[in-house]
Length: 314
Ligand SMILES: C[S@@+](CC[C@H](N)C(=O)[O-])C[C@H]1O[C@@H](n2cnc3c(N)ncnc32)[C@H](O)[C@@H]1O
Image 1: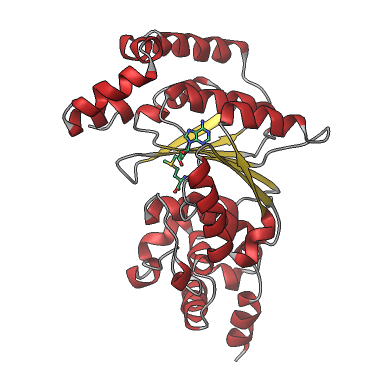
Image 2: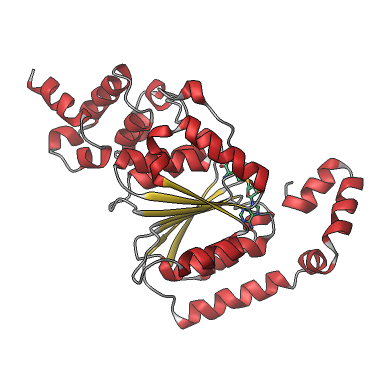
């Protein structure tokens, strides 16, 4: 009976609070029961997953049926909207917010597309933690309008936590940052905009000074052209700890800031590799050839080859 009462108490708390509980609540059998109960009472789908993830090292012993919870299902599944990222990527995105030691207050993402992927999952995670706001940058007007309508439909409960920003990240981010008060910090950033590799580096360079130690950065397409520069660049910067999640053909980068600025040596090394990447013949050609001509050439090429050149797919 006492165990049941503890389970009910835990269900009423966010997963990170459960982590901070007693030895009993930390035990795997307790968490399994908690998960089952959470599923039975129709808790938000990320909840049981997050509670389980607190036992990362022992996840292997958790029954697969419990791990199969779809992050994008649950009470709002009848309002499903279009989005990218696979289930595993959505889970990693969600967990990075749910499990952050300090609840993120400011989150920004570049490239919302239609909203059902990263935007919805970041928003729901913030809402579940009960704090935080997401700014979402999108450069395509028709997609932007549909995304806003989609988010209103799929997550009305979390809409107040969302501010869409229209335009290209290179213009929008500096303007957005300039409008903030002194001491403004960005706790979480997700980069998934355009395919040109320089863009993620520019977005990172703009945001980095505003990200505090402990802040998190994630970027999609880490294995493709989009992430081709950011990954080696960031890996050389010793004020960030970088992990690559090999969970999709596209790849997901996760990085946590571990000190305020890089050492001089690592900064020089990062700049050197960036210069070398910028001078790669394919990238030089991409800058020199007018975009109209590039588009025409890509349309004429066989699809697999065009995809290889445009977004770096194998
Ligand atoms: C791959 S999709 C994003 C997918 C989305 N994150 C998801 O999880 O569903 C890339 C989006 O970025 C937008 N985009 C491209 N370049 C951009 C830029 N420089 N700034 C902002 N958005 C950009 C595109 O219009 C497109 O909607």
